[in-house]
Length: 313
Image 1 (cartoon, one colour):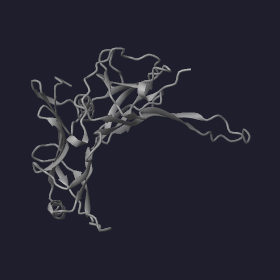
Image 2 (tube, one colour):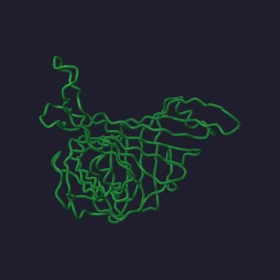
Image 3 (cartoon, helix red, strand yellow):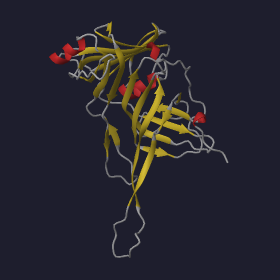
């Protein structure tokens, strides 16, 4: 009897033209991933019927929920597919290298179909009507760069064969934490020990009455940008901005070279005034849980620029 193994699992992603309708073969992409708990769940509701004895009557099925997190590496080419799902199609300029510019606050967002293949079984569940709810970045001094993408979908189609036997597959080039940087005002922000950023579309499930247990759709709410910066306390640059309630710009990036980079610009970030705790003889740290806001001049909260050799997303 064959058993399913993570090392042989395969994830495919394709963009839907009509919400909830997966694309045809030839439109899917192989997606490298670290882990996934994207799946559908359908609970049982306990019977409350009386008058038929002490033993309960059979429970009945509840609605279907499709959601979960997918952890993916921050790689040069495939990350653009997740950014498109999160922010919408980019504006692309240049000619190899191409510059793809994604902006926050899009009115409409694309939906995707995601297949998670377990060929040993065989089992190839296809999740449709999926939209990206959140994207979380974590910057550290060392290690592998990866993000967590929160997804919400409409339904699952069971399959025993893959929907696309010949999906496209981009060359894999991964960013590392060593290539990360944090800037403020165009200059490297010193003494940063860790940084995190989460952008959320705050999706809302449209739970209309249907006979198939599925939701009717997933609509975007008011977007949010939040995160954390931890610094060794060596100057008062951030503390002064926090005290004054003055917003700063924040740039987090992974850069291999001029032709291969991912830059996240947060145009207007507000810092709270944190406590400075002294717990021993070592260095003192301060941690700022920041929040982003729309820049009135630029018209959006964040801009993500991806430079690579992919012509279009």
